Image (cartoon, rainbow, N blue to C red):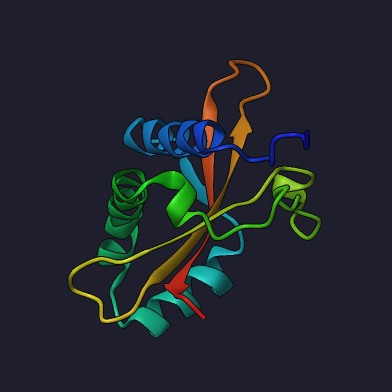
Length: 131
């Protein structure tokens, strides 16, 4: 009998819910926002307000579609090696469709506990058309 494959559907659901809670609680930041966010906004053809409003909708869509179906990451999840702020954190990537876009959208984030409070922060990494 083989071992369960990480991440399980339950784990994916928990990660999406944790990101959702962090975002609604105002605990959202981005890595390389000058580079990634600007490039993603250009590629999507949206302004900054529209871009940031997409994130909660994408998470909700992934939850509704089924986290395991929407998951676009590796098994096991890759860990960040490039960005000091998220070094060694698991990267959570998903792909979903929203009605106003003719293509699937790919988004990726990491979850980081605050060192003192333990509150989870959502660190946004990518949001662009799926490639």
